[in-house]
Length: 173
Image 1 (tube, rainbow, N blue to C red):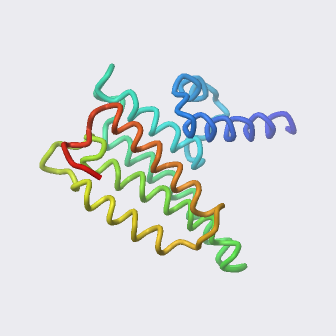
Image 2 (cartoon, rainbow, N blue to C red):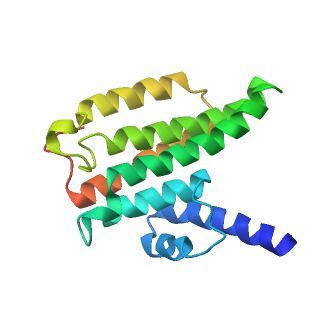
Image 3 (cartoon, rainbow, N blue to C red):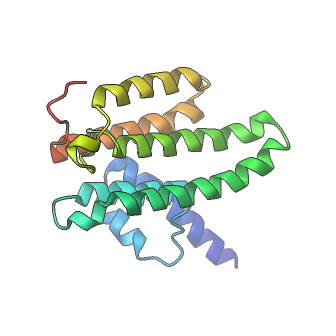
């Protein structure tokens, strides 16, 4: 039981490090572990970013929008369960879960934007709108490193994937 918990915790930390560093081979290996819970935010974000990284290189279905949104929904439900319990105690206890919802929302919004090119051209949100939403979100968040750093790391990863895949849509940031 203790070993299983340690393995689960190790996979979560490894997934978090892998997507932050852009180590997509490591992320692909982690997905094979039965202990890798795709509803955990670090693992789920890593899985989605890995699929976006693979998008249009090998298989268009790897980054399909419906499956990405389903994964986001599962992560949102998991966070919601923790958030509802934490809200009963205090705002300070609930705020880290709120920050995770911010990350999830940014991931979904980026997938719907022209930043990543997952949707057809006529269904995409302009990149300028995405950047404006990012600015507004950062203004809303508490100015604490532990809250803002995960959101900024996610943005960096999304921008790196977008640049690599050439999906900036001719728009400038």
